[in-house]
View 1 (tube, helix red, strand yellow):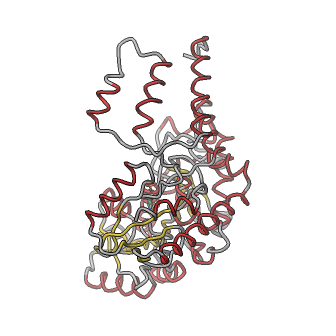
View 2 (cartoon, rainbow, N blue to C red):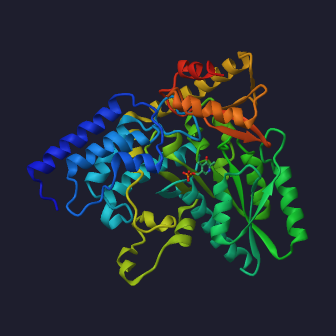
View 3 (cartoon, rainbow, N blue to C red):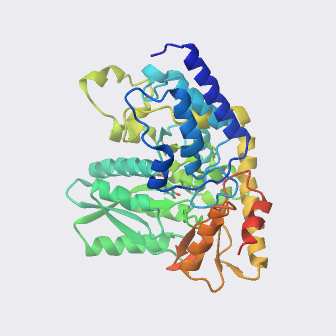
Length: 450
Ligand SMILES: *Cc1c(COP(=O)(O)O)cnc(C)c1O
């Protein structure tokens, strides 16, 4: 180990050159291959004597990397794409090369200091107080789970622990909320949205009151608002939901894994009013904040509440219990962690927050232009005016089969990656635009195939 031989040095250059080319040259979209195809191309890679770095890299470059869809391609518009800035991707190499430990101040003070400044930038955008703080976790799913666990920890103190706990959220909340409920062995109360797809205060209050009076052994302990649904980008009435949570004295969590990035965009900032009243929020820098996978910022309004719920205790950890030091491990379900917030921090520090504001506004602008093109298209119907950077529409007369065939051909022709979704039981198409390199000509090229 750490024997920097001429061979290692040569491999280092190869890897750096490959990484540089991948960042510099627009990659093809590529496509998955079946396991049988991959076996035929690649065969067994784990061998007694090892392939050597040069050959292993060659196999990766030629067959494995090209069997992965390029999530940062400007015409990858399915799900939520990824669009790391060059600086963020490059810094991920540094995070790996330096073996940083991001769990404790004792071991990673410098890294934790930088990550905390990045979290503070988000906290300021959300108008969270000085007491706010949290940690970068793997993704929105773990972020939501950790916030909900903290919410239940505090509910037990407030309401005792004899009842069956329930998470109240919109019927359109992300699947990770139901997954968290399963892990926690609690129930969910999905609440009907209004006609625009938003969870509003009146519906939330009525549903929770009705549910609790019918089920006296159950207690709703948290209300989840979504700030940008994954399918359509819809933002719940956060101020109204904060009122309801306040009235019921329960935790208010905002899931903004995709949408809260747009806190940085002045043209839509007011849609998030009320987020400052949340007890916790999440936003994924790997979605619309130009960081590579995988990073979710989990922030508590009062960091101490997250810490009380999550600190792990063990004899060998006691040495870390210095109250004046900030240990990221204490704020979520995790102990060992890489400093996964650093690529985001580096990009934000190097590019400046104004560049972030511009890039997010640019996605919003392309989305507005895309929706105009769809409205003008003879065979397409816009589903609804986009709220953020997701535009959803239907192709007149198509069934799910035709959408799927079109999607498959679009990828096979290497034009774009757009997958069918559904809304109220009917198939739809959606473009999720978070990549600042997606141009209106990319949208036109895809629309021309419809
Ligand atoms: C993507 C998403 C999640 C899940 O985040 P992961 O990082 O994929 O785990 C949760 N909520 C919303 C609203 C999302 O868009």
